[in-house]
Image 1 (cartoon, rainbow, N blue to C red):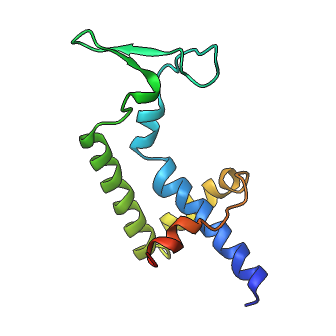
Image 2: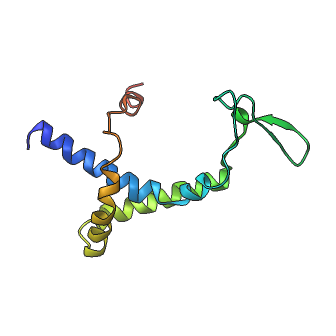
Image 3: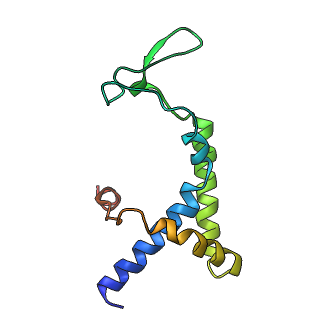
Length: 121
């Protein structure tokens, strides 16, 4: 397989794995709800008032707690594990085909240099 074909296959695989293993997870629950209005465009004009009466700038608010991130990461790991082990299962193949159309509309993936550089530091 030539380099261009490798890139096409890797891009297709990355998109469908992101769709099935990351996008359609508890991330959707975390993403749901009302988005606050901002007039500045950077949310510097948005604040959250917590139960103790603290007025916290939106840009400093944690939008996901430790338990939520732990559950999200476990779900993603389980889905990636399932994807790798069951990739030839006809039911998973049908799911992949069903979602591939939506996933191919996403932007072209790029190499993330941060992943490569971390191992060399």
